[in-house]
Length: 317
Image (cartoon, rainbow, N blue to C red; front, side):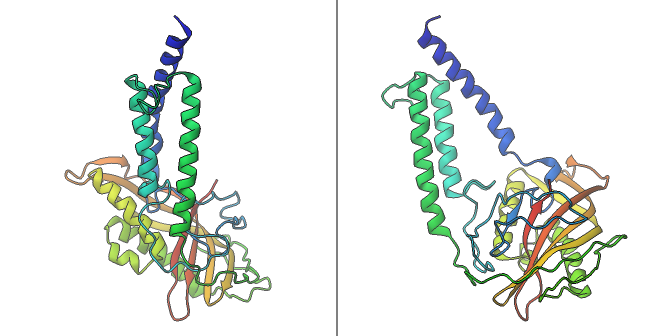
Protein backbone atom coordinates (compact mmCIF):
# COMPACT_ATOMS: atom_id res chain seq x y z
CA UNK A 1 0.00 0.00 0.00
CA UNK A 2 1.38 3.38 -0.97
CA UNK A 3 1.85 6.07 1.64
CA UNK A 4 -0.96 8.24 0.26
CA UNK A 5 -3.37 5.29 0.38
CA UNK A 6 -2.23 4.43 3.92
CA UNK A 7 -2.69 8.04 5.06
CA UNK A 8 -6.20 8.19 3.59
CA UNK A 9 -7.05 4.91 5.31
CA UNK A 10 -5.70 6.23 8.63
CA UNK A 11 -7.70 9.45 8.30
CA UNK A 12 -10.90 7.53 7.57
CA UNK A 13 -10.29 5.25 10.55
CA UNK A 14 -9.79 8.24 12.85
CA UNK A 15 -12.93 9.84 11.44
CA UNK A 16 -14.98 6.71 12.12
CA UNK A 17 -13.69 6.50 15.70
CA UNK A 18 -14.50 10.16 16.32
CA UNK A 19 -17.93 9.84 14.75
CA UNK A 20 -18.74 6.96 17.06
CA UNK A 21 -17.22 8.57 20.14
CA UNK A 22 -18.82 12.01 19.86
CA UNK A 23 -22.41 10.95 20.55
CA UNK A 24 -21.21 9.10 23.63
CA UNK A 25 -19.24 12.11 24.85
CA UNK A 26 -22.13 14.51 24.28
CA UNK A 27 -24.91 12.30 25.58
CA UNK A 28 -26.57 12.95 28.91
CA UNK A 29 -25.31 10.56 31.53
CA UNK A 30 -28.19 8.53 32.84
CA UNK A 31 -26.53 8.50 36.25
CA UNK A 32 -26.58 12.32 36.36
CA UNK A 33 -30.12 12.99 35.14
CA UNK A 34 -31.10 14.96 38.26
CA UNK A 35 -31.41 18.72 38.26
CA UNK A 36 -28.21 20.23 36.92
CA UNK A 37 -27.42 17.12 34.91
CA UNK A 38 -24.25 16.38 36.84
CA UNK A 39 -22.64 19.56 35.53
CA UNK A 40 -21.07 22.40 37.46
CA UNK A 41 -23.20 25.35 36.44
CA UNK A 42 -23.97 28.90 37.53
CA UNK A 43 -22.20 31.80 39.18
CA UNK A 44 -20.71 32.63 42.59
CA UNK A 45 -20.28 36.36 42.09
CA UNK A 46 -16.65 37.45 42.15
CA UNK A 47 -15.70 34.00 43.49
CA UNK A 48 -17.00 32.09 40.47
CA UNK A 49 -13.47 31.26 39.40
CA UNK A 50 -12.22 30.47 42.92
CA UNK A 51 -12.77 27.02 44.38
CA UNK A 52 -14.83 27.03 47.59
CA UNK A 53 -13.08 25.72 50.70
CA UNK A 54 -13.43 22.02 51.41
CA UNK A 55 -15.73 20.96 54.22
CA UNK A 56 -16.44 17.89 56.29
CA UNK A 57 -19.32 17.05 53.97
CA UNK A 58 -17.26 17.64 50.82
CA UNK A 59 -13.60 17.16 51.83
CA UNK A 60 -12.38 16.92 48.25
CA UNK A 61 -12.21 19.52 45.55
CA UNK A 62 -15.05 20.82 43.41
CA UNK A 63 -15.21 20.85 39.64
CA UNK A 64 -14.71 24.06 37.73
CA UNK A 65 -17.82 25.46 36.10
CA UNK A 66 -18.80 23.83 32.83
CA UNK A 67 -21.52 26.41 32.28
CA UNK A 68 -21.30 29.98 33.52
CA UNK A 69 -21.95 33.48 32.20
CA UNK A 70 -19.90 35.24 34.84
CA UNK A 71 -16.72 37.13 34.32
CA UNK A 72 -14.04 37.61 37.00
CA UNK A 73 -15.26 40.21 39.47
CA UNK A 74 -18.91 39.85 38.41
CA UNK A 75 -21.77 40.08 40.87
CA UNK A 76 -25.29 38.75 41.17
CA UNK A 77 -26.65 37.64 37.80
CA UNK A 78 -30.03 39.25 37.15
CA UNK A 79 -30.44 39.05 33.40
CA UNK A 80 -31.36 35.74 31.78
CA UNK A 81 -28.50 34.79 29.45
CA UNK A 82 -29.01 33.53 25.93
CA UNK A 83 -29.86 29.84 25.67
CA UNK A 84 -26.99 27.39 25.62
CA UNK A 85 -23.38 27.89 26.62
CA UNK A 86 -20.41 28.15 24.34
CA UNK A 87 -20.11 24.41 24.28
CA UNK A 88 -22.86 23.51 26.75
CA UNK A 89 -25.21 20.63 26.24
CA UNK A 90 -27.69 22.87 24.44
CA UNK A 91 -24.95 23.90 22.01
CA UNK A 92 -26.10 27.48 21.49
CA UNK A 93 -24.98 29.41 18.41
CA UNK A 94 -21.30 28.63 18.70
CA UNK A 95 -21.90 25.03 19.78
CA UNK A 96 -24.05 24.43 16.71
CA UNK A 97 -21.50 26.16 14.51
CA UNK A 98 -18.62 24.07 15.82
CA UNK A 99 -20.69 20.88 15.62
CA UNK A 100 -21.60 21.71 12.04
CA UNK A 101 -17.98 22.20 11.07
CA UNK A 102 -16.94 18.98 12.78
CA UNK A 103 -19.82 16.94 11.41
CA UNK A 104 -19.24 18.18 7.88
CA UNK A 105 -15.55 17.44 8.20
CA UNK A 106 -16.11 13.89 9.42
CA UNK A 107 -18.55 13.14 6.63
CA UNK A 108 -16.17 14.66 4.13
CA UNK A 109 -13.36 12.40 5.29
CA UNK A 110 -15.58 9.33 5.32
CA UNK A 111 -16.64 9.92 1.73
CA UNK A 112 -13.19 10.79 0.47
CA UNK A 113 -13.58 14.54 0.19
CA UNK A 114 -11.13 15.66 2.83
CA UNK A 115 -12.10 17.53 5.94
CA UNK A 116 -13.92 20.22 4.00
CA UNK A 117 -14.39 18.14 0.88
CA UNK A 118 -12.92 20.40 -1.74
CA UNK A 119 -10.58 22.75 0.05
CA UNK A 120 -7.86 22.31 -2.53
CA UNK A 121 -8.20 18.53 -2.36
CA UNK A 122 -6.08 18.35 0.79
CA UNK A 123 -6.26 14.72 1.83
CA UNK A 124 -2.77 14.10 3.15
CA UNK A 125 -1.84 14.13 6.81
CA UNK A 126 -0.19 17.53 6.35
CA UNK A 127 -3.33 18.91 4.73
CA UNK A 128 -5.44 17.53 7.57
CA UNK A 129 -3.24 19.21 10.18
CA UNK A 130 -3.43 22.55 8.35
CA UNK A 131 -7.21 22.36 8.17
CA UNK A 132 -7.50 21.50 11.86
CA UNK A 133 -5.32 24.50 12.74
CA UNK A 134 -7.59 26.72 10.63
CA UNK A 135 -10.67 25.38 12.42
CA UNK A 136 -9.15 26.00 15.85
CA UNK A 137 -8.22 29.54 14.84
CA UNK A 138 -11.71 30.32 13.53
CA UNK A 139 -13.44 28.78 16.55
CA UNK A 140 -11.23 30.70 19.00
CA UNK A 141 -12.04 33.96 17.23
CA UNK A 142 -15.73 33.13 17.34
CA UNK A 143 -15.52 32.22 21.04
CA UNK A 144 -13.86 35.53 21.88
CA UNK A 145 -16.52 37.46 19.97
CA UNK A 146 -19.34 35.48 21.55
CA UNK A 147 -18.01 35.97 25.08
CA UNK A 148 -17.69 39.74 24.58
CA UNK A 149 -21.17 39.92 23.09
CA UNK A 150 -22.90 37.91 25.83
CA UNK A 151 -20.99 38.85 28.94
CA UNK A 152 -23.60 39.91 31.52
CA UNK A 153 -23.23 43.31 33.11
CA UNK A 154 -21.97 42.79 36.63
CA UNK A 155 -24.39 44.17 39.18
CA UNK A 156 -21.60 44.95 41.61
CA UNK A 157 -18.43 44.56 39.58
CA UNK A 158 -15.26 45.06 41.52
CA UNK A 159 -16.93 44.87 44.92
CA UNK A 160 -14.52 43.48 47.45
CA UNK A 161 -15.80 40.27 49.04
CA UNK A 162 -16.08 40.31 52.78
CA UNK A 163 -14.40 37.83 55.09
CA UNK A 164 -15.79 34.36 54.81
CA UNK A 165 -17.85 32.60 57.44
CA UNK A 166 -16.73 29.14 58.48
CA UNK A 167 -18.86 26.61 60.31
CA UNK A 168 -17.81 23.21 61.53
CA UNK A 169 -19.97 20.31 60.50
CA UNK A 170 -22.25 18.66 63.03
CA UNK A 171 -22.22 14.97 63.78
CA UNK A 172 -25.79 14.19 62.79
CA UNK A 173 -27.82 14.67 59.64
CA UNK A 174 -28.71 18.11 58.33
CA UNK A 175 -26.52 21.18 58.57
CA UNK A 176 -23.83 21.50 61.21
CA UNK A 177 -23.32 24.63 63.25
CA UNK A 178 -20.08 25.87 64.74
CA UNK A 179 -18.00 28.89 65.61
CA UNK A 180 -18.36 32.04 63.55
CA UNK A 181 -14.84 33.10 62.57
CA UNK A 182 -15.00 36.88 62.15
CA UNK A 183 -17.76 36.80 59.54
CA UNK A 184 -19.85 39.93 58.96
CA UNK A 185 -22.45 37.84 57.14
CA UNK A 186 -24.23 35.71 59.69
CA UNK A 187 -25.87 32.52 58.44
CA UNK A 188 -28.67 31.69 60.85
CA UNK A 189 -30.65 28.50 61.45
CA UNK A 190 -33.56 29.75 59.35
CA UNK A 191 -31.12 30.27 56.46
CA UNK A 192 -30.08 26.64 56.69
CA UNK A 193 -33.73 25.66 56.73
CA UNK A 194 -34.21 27.71 53.56
CA UNK A 195 -31.28 25.93 51.89
CA UNK A 196 -32.70 22.52 52.76
CA UNK A 197 -36.15 23.54 51.58
CA UNK A 198 -34.75 24.80 48.27
CA UNK A 199 -32.96 21.49 47.76
CA UNK A 200 -36.29 19.66 47.80
CA UNK A 201 -38.41 22.32 46.08
CA UNK A 202 -36.03 22.68 43.14
CA UNK A 203 -35.86 18.92 42.60
CA UNK A 204 -39.67 18.76 42.75
CA UNK A 205 -40.17 21.62 40.28
CA UNK A 206 -37.60 20.04 37.99
CA UNK A 207 -39.40 16.69 38.07
CA UNK A 208 -42.71 18.43 37.28
CA UNK A 209 -41.06 20.48 34.52
CA UNK A 210 -42.50 23.54 36.23
CA UNK A 211 -40.37 26.33 34.79
CA UNK A 212 -42.53 29.04 36.36
CA UNK A 213 -41.82 27.57 39.80
CA UNK A 214 -38.11 27.27 39.04
CA UNK A 215 -38.04 31.01 38.32
CA UNK A 216 -39.04 31.62 41.94
CA UNK A 217 -36.34 29.31 43.29
CA UNK A 218 -33.26 30.00 41.19
CA UNK A 219 -31.50 32.81 39.36
CA UNK A 220 -32.35 33.47 35.71
CA UNK A 221 -29.02 32.00 34.70
CA UNK A 222 -29.70 28.70 36.45
CA UNK A 223 -33.25 28.54 35.08
CA UNK A 224 -31.86 28.98 31.56
CA UNK A 225 -29.76 25.84 32.07
CA UNK A 226 -32.73 23.95 33.50
CA UNK A 227 -34.86 24.92 30.50
CA UNK A 228 -32.11 23.78 28.19
CA UNK A 229 -31.87 20.40 29.91
CA UNK A 230 -35.65 19.95 30.01
CA UNK A 231 -35.84 20.66 26.28
CA UNK A 232 -33.28 17.94 25.64
CA UNK A 233 -35.30 15.52 27.75
CA UNK A 234 -38.41 16.32 25.72
CA UNK A 235 -36.47 15.77 22.51
CA UNK A 236 -35.57 12.31 23.80
CA UNK A 237 -39.21 11.75 24.79
CA UNK A 238 -38.09 11.30 28.37
CA UNK A 239 -38.82 12.90 31.72
CA UNK A 240 -36.60 12.79 34.78
CA UNK A 241 -38.29 12.16 38.11
CA UNK A 242 -36.43 12.89 41.35
CA UNK A 243 -38.27 11.92 44.52
CA UNK A 244 -37.66 11.20 48.21
CA UNK A 245 -34.99 13.90 48.48
CA UNK A 246 -33.54 13.94 52.00
CA UNK A 247 -30.63 16.00 53.26
CA UNK A 248 -28.24 13.73 55.15
CA UNK A 249 -25.46 16.16 55.99
CA UNK A 250 -24.51 19.70 55.12
CA UNK A 251 -22.14 22.43 56.18
CA UNK A 252 -21.14 25.91 55.17
CA UNK A 253 -18.08 26.37 52.97
CA UNK A 254 -18.12 30.18 52.88
CA UNK A 255 -20.48 33.14 53.06
CA UNK A 256 -19.84 36.70 51.99
CA UNK A 257 -21.43 39.91 50.79
CA UNK A 258 -20.86 41.81 47.56
CA UNK A 259 -22.57 45.16 47.51
CA UNK A 260 -26.10 44.38 48.65
CA UNK A 261 -25.98 40.74 47.56
CA UNK A 262 -25.39 37.92 50.04
CA UNK A 263 -23.82 34.65 48.98
CA UNK A 264 -23.63 31.35 50.83
CA UNK A 265 -21.90 28.26 49.48
CA UNK A 266 -22.84 25.03 51.23
CA UNK A 267 -21.87 21.40 50.76
CA UNK A 268 -24.78 18.98 50.84
CA UNK A 269 -24.92 15.22 50.89
CA UNK A 270 -28.42 14.01 50.19
CA UNK A 271 -30.35 10.88 49.31
CA UNK A 272 -32.78 10.68 46.42
CA UNK A 273 -34.52 8.37 43.98
CA UNK A 274 -33.43 9.41 40.50
CA UNK A 275 -35.07 7.79 37.49
CA UNK A 276 -35.78 8.74 33.91
CA UNK A 277 -38.94 7.39 32.35
CA UNK A 278 -40.39 7.22 28.86
CA UNK A 279 -42.82 10.09 28.49
CA UNK A 280 -45.46 7.93 26.78
CA UNK A 281 -45.21 4.53 28.44
CA UNK A 282 -43.86 5.45 31.87
CA UNK A 283 -41.23 2.72 31.59
CA UNK A 284 -37.92 3.39 33.34
CA UNK A 285 -35.19 4.02 30.78
CA UNK A 286 -32.44 5.10 33.20
CA UNK A 287 -31.90 5.11 36.93
CA UNK A 288 -34.01 2.99 39.26
CA UNK A 289 -36.42 2.99 42.17
CA UNK A 290 -33.51 2.41 44.53
CA UNK A 291 -32.28 5.41 46.53
CA UNK A 292 -28.80 6.75 45.92
CA UNK A 293 -26.61 9.40 47.55
CA UNK A 294 -25.14 12.51 45.99
CA UNK A 295 -22.74 15.16 47.32
CA UNK A 296 -22.84 18.54 45.64
CA UNK A 297 -21.84 22.10 46.53
CA UNK A 298 -24.67 24.61 46.06
CA UNK A 299 -24.36 28.38 46.17
CA UNK A 300 -27.33 30.55 47.13
CA UNK A 301 -27.72 34.29 46.65
CA UNK A 302 -30.17 36.90 47.89
CA UNK A 303 -30.77 40.62 47.80
CA UNK A 304 -32.38 42.77 50.48
CA UNK A 305 -36.03 41.88 50.90
CA UNK A 306 -35.77 38.81 48.66
CA UNK A 307 -35.48 35.13 49.58
CA UNK A 308 -32.48 32.95 48.87
CA UNK A 309 -32.20 31.63 45.30
CA UNK A 310 -30.01 28.91 43.86
CA UNK A 311 -27.12 30.56 42.05
CA UNK A 312 -24.80 27.63 41.29
CA UNK A 313 -24.32 23.87 41.55
CA UNK A 314 -20.85 22.34 41.61
CA UNK A 315 -19.92 18.69 41.46
CA UNK A 316 -17.42 17.20 43.92
CA UNK A 317 -14.33 15.25 42.92
